[in-house]
Image (cartoon, rainbow, N blue to C red):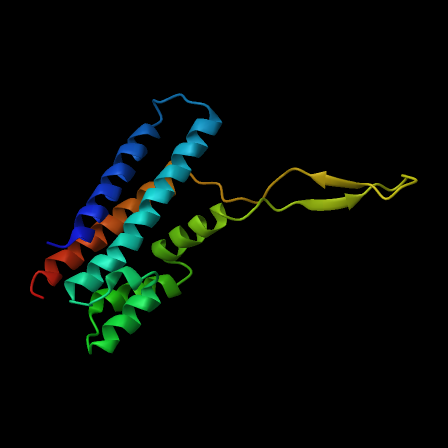
Length: 167
């Protein structure tokens, strides 16, 4: 049995549970909502990472643990003369800035970046003092895009799995 299949299912389950906590009837703090949103995004990213390895394993790639990106998947499978549509679809989605997958991965990448700070020099200061504006440009996540990414990912996984059974 493909161990990555279980890992993907677990991360999708965790994402679903966390999304349930973001329902409008849960009157939590803004910080709690932000923490839940980031947690959903983390679970979705982990599910995607595991899914790349699930596809590699399904197509009998010998070292799926070496697969970290969709490019790794495409080149790894090409090395064993396999070019599945599943890998190509994910590669196309990652390359399209308007796709749900590209947006999800960009949002995840931005979470690990420090907040952008705009520095201003105080005009009438005898010493060079920098005033730092504390507004950050971090991604503002919400329930709606996260739910959309979850649904798109789950649909893609289900569709791919139904096709990969034949492998």
